[in-house]
Length: 252
Image (tube, rainbow, N blue to C red; front, side, top):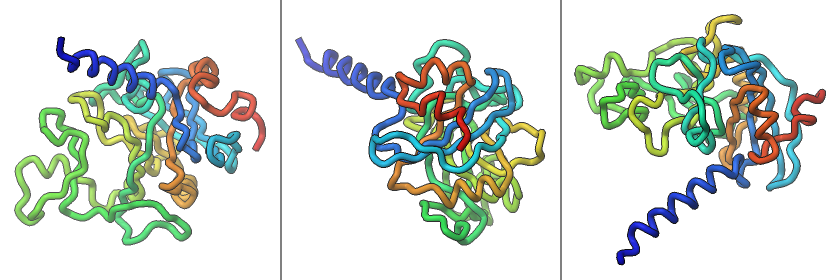
């Protein structure tokens, strides 16, 4: 009998076990946002740090963030896609819940804020992020060769030039490894458009809070993002290697 199928099943089991472990051991910077419920467009965000796999410690004070206008749905990251319940899809106006790695920062500026040290890309008129799930490069950052003569699809997919809310974009790696058609795309931290205006699925905040986060991030510490309803967090904290509820809800 061929070993191909048993080996493939073993790989899937091991991969599922790795995802089910929760926050990975190499993550030393953790961003946690808790929403009151699955349908809430608001959350409170708190940063944490640790050395190695040591205990989590709070970093700074919590602050408010805005989510998708319809709330949350399970996303596809390190944790989320295996969970029962509502799952995110394109244009559902829900933020992906679960545990996610962070990707690169995208900005219209030539440099990051003072004190920042993190991989970034300066967005140009040739750059796009694809949210058309019929395209092979769905949920990917792409750069075209000749922005003076762009392909027909480019006008809809290009990254918005000089949009104040997108001055700083931090990629939340939802549905990225690999992207699955219609499971949601272009999920970022970005500047909020108003104190009460939710997003289409991103996590937005005051620019001062976002800049503070950007200057804190370090790629070598493998930052991750946790977004969950509060009740789910309380149920999963121990098994997903999350900061304890006592630490999360205590004063900084």
